[in-house]
Length: 221
Image (cartoon, helix red, strand yellow):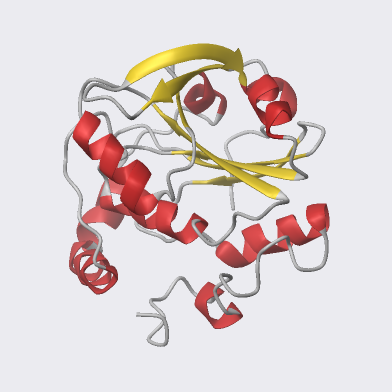
């Protein structure tokens, strides 16, 4: 996947994130720490950080569901969002229904998104891709029973960052709008970090045919 620049641990380790309490009517921040501190606190062999473009977005919810099979006693999965108080209901729905209730953090100053290139969807190529794939996307979301909304900041794209147990960044998969996550690539990276099985429980891991070509698998729908 092409990146505008090489993203390193130095770019992202000092990013300050706020932990969130999603149990109240209004989502509130409860503390702050650097991304490196948060990763080391997980005490896992690998940590996946999902920087979501917008938690109400159906594409981000699809990515969250894809990641739901990747947690094990060797792997931590964390989410990052840009804002609270705008669509707290949508954030809670994303957290519970599409992200396995894993911890979610607030990047109030968009430091992580800036480190990932501050990639806007307002480019001719990106807008054309969205418009030309609308019918296909609608069908895919319907098949997967994914619902969403249009509330909140959704112009700056996110992506996936994978860290090892020392807190070092080992892989970045930038959001490629309209496309599913490349789960084969993610699984291969995890296998290199935590072992042959990637730390993915056999009973919950999607079969390898689900990883191919970003297609909806008829055996799993």
